[in-house]
Image: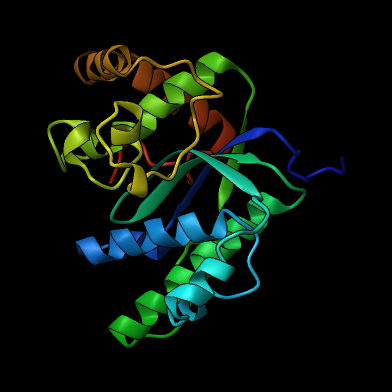
Length: 225
């Protein structure tokens, strides 16, 4: 593997945010659009998502199968940024996935807001996840982002993350993640684990320290926004 390349079958924490922390998810439809885009582009696609939406239902069925390039393990969409844990399944699959979802949402946002130009701050950032413990605590940090930002009191009140999938509260048709082969999670125990993080903040601070070491102070926010 050449320097700078992302490894196949490895797990990465991926982070991206808007230019100047501009609020780019303003209403439910915006968050839902990104979730749909993520679900669509985790497979390799020949059609843009906007083109796919214009197909008849029978044509959509014919285009529904494609090789999966990433596995989404965890995510949280915030008003100004996105956190993801991704497993790369195909060489360059993670970069392709991120470029597709960010470009797709930019076109959607610019069209609806009658604007032009880039929406995201530089290239997405990524850090290799090299231990199971790091992975588990990172899911909690990501799921607690809306709580630490003061947007909700409990993580299950934020609709636009994978937390409800982890605790068995999300309907099957809305699920995006495949985490059960990676993390042995009991929904009730995981819920308790996350809620303990709300009270203590100790593990969250630990993860922030790791993120700051890997990303640099100018990149990773000290709090969810």
